Length: 241
Picture 1: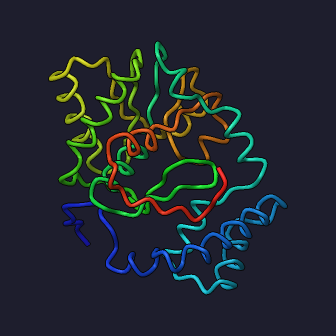
Picture 2: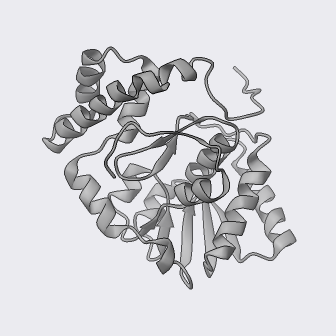
Picture 3: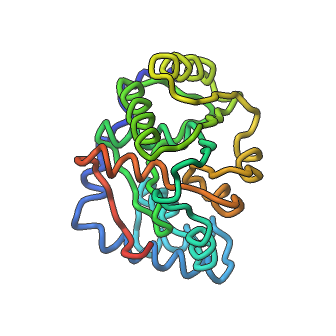
C-alpha cells in the first residue's frame, strides 16, 4: 500500500496508549523487561511475557521494547557516550535515517520515547521505505544549526541504499549543504550499521545494535529535540538512564 503520509505524527490511539494514566504500568514493564534481559532471557519471549503480564497493546509493547535494555548494555553505552562538551573539533558519522526520523516525529507531535539508556527513540517503522514529510526540511535545518553550534568539524551522513527514496534524501541533504556551506559528506551504503560499528569517529545513532559496539557515540537526536523542539511529546516510561 502506498505511503501518503505528510507527517510522522502520532497514531490516532496514542493519547490513550501513552497517557499519564498508563505511564506507571509502562514503567513497571520496562523495569521487568530490563531485569529479564539482564539475566539473558531471549528478547522476543521476554517481551511477550512482560506484555502479557501488563496487558499491553501492540504499540505499547513496541515502546517497552525500545525503552528497555540489560544492566550491562546500559553501563556499556554510558561508558562510551560522548558529551556535547567534548564534541568541538570532532568529526561525526551519522546514522541518517535513525536520527532524522526521530526529529521529524518530534516536530510533528509524534511519540518520542526516553529510553533506559537515555536515548530518544521514535515509534516509526520504515520497513524498507522512506517518505519525505513536511517536517523533513526543518529537521535537517535544525540538525545543521545544532552541529554548527556544537562546533563539529565535519559530518559523514550514511543512508541505507536499499531503502526506497534514499537517493532523493541524499540529493536534498547535498542541496542543503550547498546553501549553508556545512562540511557534510552524504553517502549511500548497503548497510550503515556495519560501517558505523567500526567507525574511528564519534557515531550519532540511537540504534541499540550500533551503540553496543561503537567505540564512541553521541546522543544527537535527543540533543536536537531538547534544544529545538521544546513542545515535543516525550514519553518517559522509565526513571533510569
